[in-house]
Image (cartoon, rainbow, N blue to C red):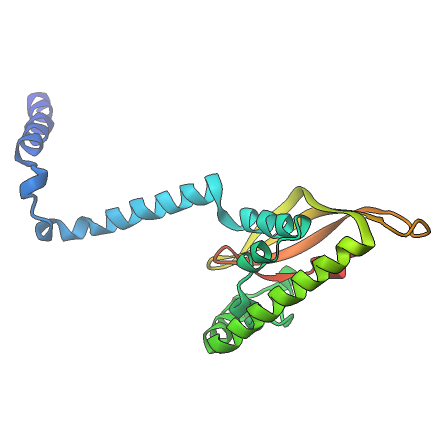
Length: 202
């Protein structure tokens, strides 16, 4: 019995190495193994997300865009269809499976033409606002001090809580300087922001 156990794996390994030829490989014969390939791709996507992307990276890009007053960077961080579907109708701290299903249905119903208009309008508004800020403030700095939590609240959807610091120095000598840090919640869907309470905190 011990000899058979020793021989069998050796024969299998040797046969595998002799038979396998990439050029003549019959993929159809091995279609059931396609699931493994899909799993490998999924792992690669996860690794890329951990190393250089993902919801936290999205939030960093958004805040970085605010700090550098870069309208395009901010807009590229936002899912406008998702924002329209969210419309402040949900609570990130109490988001159920039914809420997620409803969000997805709303997401599918969003008019894509309206989204394009919203993107253009927001870009113009941001650029105008940033121009005004240059006249009013000597300096404007916004940065993430730390991430407090990351919670998965649906497929490809995360609620991110981050400590965001805002430091502003006005051109008006009589105005007080602002230097405060508060916790902001961001909802990220497919690595794009659909909701942020950031603007209501300061």
